[in-house]
Length: 529
Ligand SMILES: C[S@@+](CC[C@H](N)C(=O)[O-])C[C@H]1O[C@@H](n2cnc3c(N)ncnc32)[C@H](O)[C@@H]1O
Image (cartoon, rainbow, N blue to C red; front, top):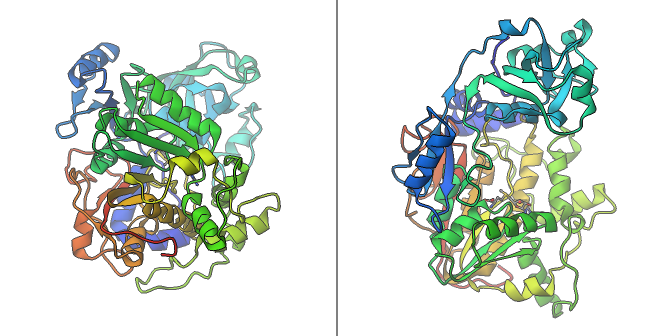
């Protein structure tokens, strides 16, 4: 048993990324993506706590660990971890539990195993037994094809799950005997005794004083740098990490409108705002693609906004849901966009627009209203008017191909292209809501140039009023240069964090993959641009 994960890319995605990064760098990225960062980052709520005090409290919570305040980002505290380690599987005497991918990724970040993550276990386990914990990946060679939860790890099942032996994540102690383990639907199932990575579990610690937030996310909010008292729009806000950071930068003064597309997500933002005492935040349910589309349609048809229009619900902003679902199938129907070889020599097609996307997604689901103009509630329409924000943050829903650790990637190129079309619709809204003279920060947690540099090119080419500007805090490396991407000068103005140790501008960083661009709107735009 060992820990020897590898990312299996869809061949076309691999070709596209190989073209962007080169084979050697893609290999390095792939190796790091399946491993956790050894530098957990916590953001301190400087509205109520001093980073040095937080360091002292963390030292007491995690004896032997040496947390420190980040040398550049003073609101960030870094908690170092260790790995790779070699747990002693001998002590388990062949006893094993198999867990699913999400549970496996959580264990790599310092969690224990909870009941919903359990898939299978050896015969005859008793409460308190030490067990080897292995991970079975769905949908991939050597993965499981539908193991029933609660299955006994017989020789036959072991033979069906050979890949798990290279995904052993540690040794744990089970809380119940075999039957009890699977009877319970929630709660602790395996208390981890040793893991391949020793990462202090910081989730939920010092609530209200700190929150787990990757360093590039903190940088993104600092880069927007909204002035106290200004009007700020966070278009895709939940769970609210960056929203709360923006409130911090604004000194909790001014107006910070935070949107997300469903009520439960907006509640997450509200609850975080309450925990952090950030009362400049107004969180609202809205489909941010509609900020532009709806007003454009109303202008074209001369219709005022319908009074009493219902707010956006999950079903009415389902274009993204159906799109996310499509990433999990490699169906060629989702690829009906003709992938063409473009000038960069790769097979990325940036010509799909949201209308095409919506007509495709709505035709695949008759109940979906994705193809129709969803309505904004009158409250949102009143709060989010055209050209009224000093600063806009678009932390776009993305393929998350920078998040670590990630044991499985199932994105296809057509699915990534659809997602990019959706992001472009959000960019239209962002530009539309921004005041002349205002700033937009666009960021993602993906390495995919089609969701990053490609969109920067799109904005610059489409709106001459939008200029890339120098970012006040640069910890990442430059963007990608090339046709359809950036010029050498532009590349220096964006920042790209590669998800590898030393993947930013400093060898010290060990972050997730992330991308940040900052624009200034130098003149007004119209609804038809
Ligand atoms: C990357 S996450 C945002 C993370 C958040 N900014 C933070 O720092 O905690 C993207 C968010 O966009 C939201 N989203 C997706 N489509 C949206 C839309 N059309 N309008 C508003 N929010 C949307 C998703 O629900 C998700 O919460």
